[in-house]
Image (tube, rainbow, N blue to C red):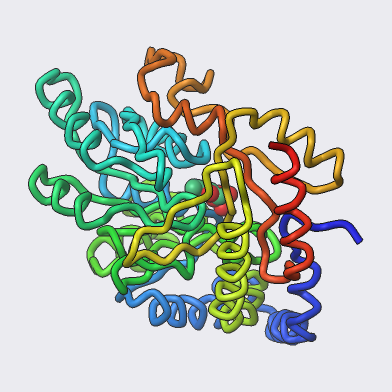
Length: 371
Ligand SMILES: *Cc1c(COP(=O)(O)O)cnc(C)c1O
C-alpha cells in the first residue's frame, strides 16, 4: 500500500453516495448554470465564513480577477503581494494591467511580512511612478497572514485588502474564519484544496454590498438589470450547478477533515528531525492545505523520499519575482532573500485526512533517516 500525497478517493468513498445524490438532483431539474444549488451553496458559505455576501465562480484565479476588476484596478496601479505563492496570485494583477509589487515574507509563517510591506508601500510612494491601490496577502499552505498588521496599514494608506484564501478554507485568525479577513476574499475549489469540487471552481467573499453587486455583474459579462443589458466588461465566470452540488455534499465534512489534518500535522511536528517544521502562532488555525518543511538539501531529500516510494512535492521552487513571465519587472536574485531562501528549501510531505498514524510514522522515519 503506497502513501498518497492527497487522497481524494478515500474522501469520495466516505461521502457514501451523497455526492451522487446531489449531482442527480441537478440532472433531474436540468438547470446546469445558476441552478438552485449555486444559490444554496453561496448561502451556506456565507454562514460558514461569517460574511454578508458570497458569489461562487469558475475558479480561484477568476475569483481574484473579479475582485481586482471590481475595484477598478488597471494601468498605473501598484498591487502589493508576496512572491512566495502560486503564480495566479500575481498573474491576475498583470492581467488587469496593473503592476505587481513583490514583498518579502516572514520565513517562519511563509506569509507576507508586514514590516517589509510598509517599506514597499513607502518606496512606491516616494518613487511616484505608480499609485498604491491594494494588497493581496496569501494564506499560504492554509495559515492566515497577519491581518491585524496588514489591515492597519491598509487603513492608514487607503488600500484595499484582497485575501487570497485559496488554501485556507477552514482556517482562522483570532477567532475569525479565513475568507472574512480582508475587505474581500477569493478562494479556490480546485480538487486538491481544503474544500475541493470535482473540477474547477472558486468563490469571492465580502461584507461590502456595493463591491458584491459589481462582482456579480462582472461574473456574467458585466450584465445590468437583465441578461442583454451590459453595463461594463466582465467575464463568463459562473460555477456549474453540478460543482455546487458536489460542494454542498462536501461542506459538512470540512470541519472533521480539518481536525484529521491537524492530527497529522501535530504528529509530523513532534516526530520530524533535521528539517524546519511549520510554525502556527497562537490565535491562528491553519487549514493544513499542505504540510511544508524547509531542508537545506531539499533536492536530495526529494530523491531520497521518492526512492522510498513516499510522494513529496515542491511548492514553490521559483519565487514569482524571478519567474520569466515577470522578467520585464526587472527583479534580481537577492531582492527578496526570505522568499528565495524558502523556494530553495521548501518541500511538502503527504497531507490528507485519511493518513493513518502508521503512515505518518513511515514518512517521519523516511525523513529522519535522511539526516
Ligand atoms: C490554487 C490557487 C489559486 C488559483 O486557484 P484556481 O482555482 O486553480 O484558479 C490562487 N492562489 C493560490 C494561493 C492558490 O493556491
